[in-house]
Image (tube, rainbow, N blue to C red; front, side, top):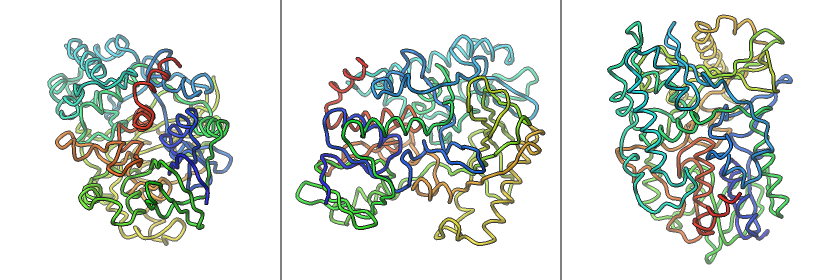
Length: 500
């Protein structure tokens, strides 16, 4: 039996950030990961000599003095990563058929680029920017401040969809076809946009990217490497190939057992994996039945279908921006079934391997997917799903590639090989039920039910990660700070972070 002050289950970003903070504060920390490499969605994988990011395509607010920059400076990441700023005049491009609209960085650039494309829109865009500022100012942790009131709750109980439609629903593009509201919400992959999405979630994420959008040169696995090295340097452990199968309460200590029978005893326990998966490891009498029922009833965000494309040399340009392509201006629709008009939207991104890159080496194409389409293979594992499943993957890849080729006709001919990720692939890789992109769906209509607090009713047991806060790199970083704040005291921890 190995003994630690803190055991952390899962080495995604939240688990590694918690491990960094607590080991830095003198705790004897052990982070346990079921995969062969730490990082969760930060991981990269290599096929045919090409490196692909798993889940992080770009990050926001990494400019000097901005939110993520300040949090990561404390963690020792800022300054140790090579970043590629995305195009200032359009880091995201939103496309509806032949109509294309840039989302520029910084408030004045954002307004100046969009307002000529939407007659009479300048005052609306100015109001949007003002809303973003008001909502972020009401969110203390976004500014590294101690939460002292419930002011931000006002924006957690308002809907993003209604906000966008009210704000820009009566303003149209010059040709009269595209409502401004659809363009403003056109990158809603970033916040799992649905009819339930809180205004707070959409505003925080969009403000972060408008402040400054960046790609990580060489891939997001560099973040995981830095965080892992920091934990080990501080005397902590990061173990891989250790899938946790049970959690037991041993007289106010926690006994955690891995699949190979190894035991870990600790005073504190943090789970950075999905709460439903966590509760499955606990005996019935360890968790209140009402809490277990509540967690198991929660709806997850949409799943995804992803193409990881290896490209032929000098055949497709490196795009220093991301493209969101839509069939319809109703960008809030749930993903349709595969046998209907799927896909309705897609994201195209070309990762940056080096500064000054001219041609893309890889590309990622992502769309929403309906998990129900894959229920016949729900109880199967990787490599053992049969011919019908493989045919379905290839058919889906063909449909998605044809959809993107309407906008980028040169892309199919530039592909040298392709890796296909379905909701089952993503589920098995991340451990998130139903292959959900962002875990539990936050619902502004019932925030108390769908918001999970870091501190639980079980003494010294904590949750962290995207299910306790906003998802994404920034949201998950803040979630880890929230969790560690429950252990160390949030005021003193934030003071140290502010001081770098």
